[in-house]
Picture 1 (spheres, rainbow, N blue to C red):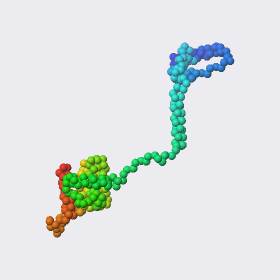
Picture 2: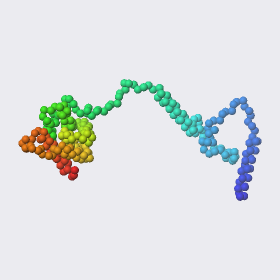
Picture 3: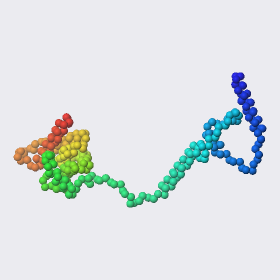
Picture 4: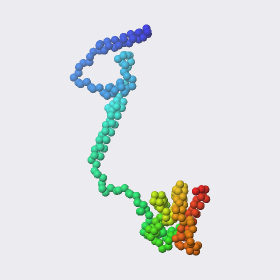
Length: 281
């Protein structure tokens, strides 16, 4: 307690001596010249120049030198931030003004390219005829379960057997992998819609399924393959092609009967081949 009182008395005496020195100092002579305004460095020295000045409390301690570099002009942190914010406001005003005065889009601007409709994806005209001729060569012999009726052009086959024709076009485009995948995917979609949504059970649908599984199996996953195998079996069962024709001798089979028998044999072969490779169906 005594030590604290001694320190307070010492501090009081120092303050009294400082006040007496300020009273004794003569006032500077008045000058007609205007006093120079304080420099930014002097104003900022106490805030940005390091230690605060305590010369009025401790006369023996010199005030620190003002750091002018940190306070010259507008280089203080506060001024820099204000300048950045001002520039951003000016840019926003410029952008809003230019957006308000912008002209409408030129009518001659290029339009977004639209995707082809499903009907435009498939070959037509002379190209379709050429692809059909290529399939009827050595390729058709590799799949004897589906035989194209003799004397049909590509346009006639497309009208009479649309799924069979599309299965042929998918196989015939094997030199253009991108196009083949596009056509095969479209055929999978159309067969699924016809069988599941429209409940179609026709020989044309069954033959299209057989060609799709025979020539496009590398571009469909296992789930799709298994689904189409069971779909093929159900369509063949609905058509009743597994039943022998009644009242017809073996030598009296018509072309339509032989075509149905070949389709049933194709279903059995494809399913058996898949079961042998994957062990269950």
